[in-house]
Image 1 (spheres, rainbow, N blue to C red):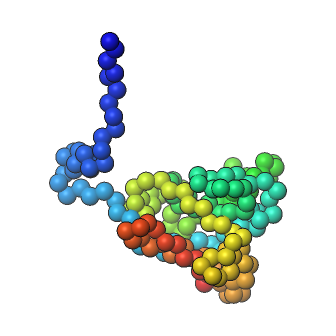
Image 2 (tube, one colour; image 1 turned 90 degrees about the horizontal axis):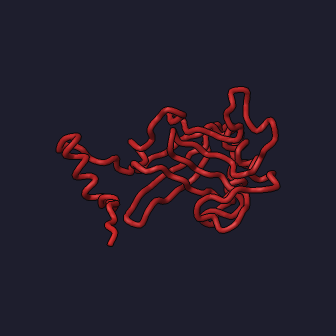
Image 3 (cartoon, rainbow, N blue to C red; image 1 turned 135 degrees about the vertical axis):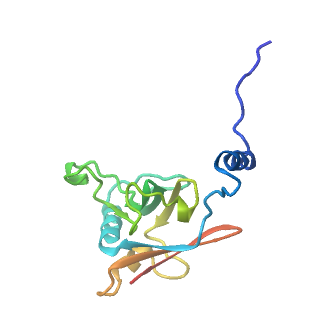
Length: 170
């Protein structure tokens, strides 16, 4: 008879208790907060247009089919990026960064958005071509933003059932 010496991952409650023991009784895991992230509108438009004009699209977690989308990613900073597949030599800028990406104001590389958005990494898909809540499709919202608009706003609200996103420009 062989023994299995692997240990299951601790339950989240146990993990939080362990962190409180190590970090002190006042430790609280980062909570998700309602907030508004702002992005440079020109960079979001560029990423969206890239996705819309791309001939191939990557699938994200839970995406049922390949079509134009922006991905909202939270990890090392938080950003929106095109899901368009582009292997051309100019897909990256002179510093090696992807061209079709827009970081949220004050949440660029090297920042930790978990203080506002909770502790886990995040990937949300924003469909560019289907109407949102009986309104225009996201690509139309971006294309038809007022001439004076310079920011894309991603409103994030949390409740018992999950997260709700609302998108506007200003």
